[in-house]
Image 1 (cartoon, one colour):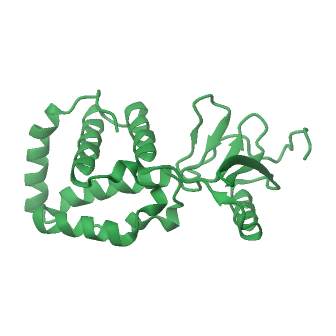
Image 2 (image 1 turned 30 degrees about the vertical axis):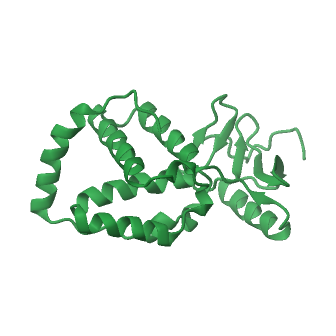
Image 3 (image 1 turned 45 degrees about the horizontal axis):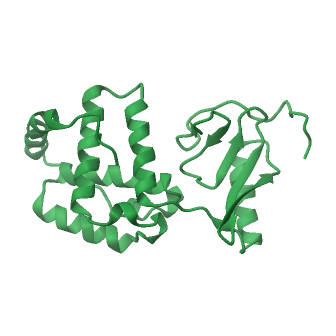
Length: 214
């Protein structure tokens, strides 16, 4: 691996790239939808973040672009079954999601309140979710949870909670295309139900503050 930065290497954020974000120290670019992929910001080099016998390691990837890096990561994991993809708890994913919500400059204060409200409601109605490893949540778990609310709540209410569940699972280490919550389809919303939901939320969210934590 050369120390000379290749002029063709993509060292800057380009497009969405799976809702990329930076590590707290600003040195690493993270890709929640590809949770085992990292990019060192200053050089543009890509790395796989995996575990061997529970020990976290990084391995450099021969890739110059994000798409090449995804393929190289898949190939590495396929060729080395001893490498364990990193998985966190749902609670860790929820904390990362809450940080994203609180620091997002493109979300209105009302939208942030809504998302904190649904995050709190999700935890209240799924006991033990916070402590589960993200890869222990199954599509059957998500379907059972969704079934309870589709019978008791309106469609818009369920759809909001479903959206809140999907992102923390990916931030906990589940790849986008393997996310069990994405196997649950959003429900169609009746116009009268949407209006009633928005009215109730306008009242309910005034009780939610920014001091809550996942």
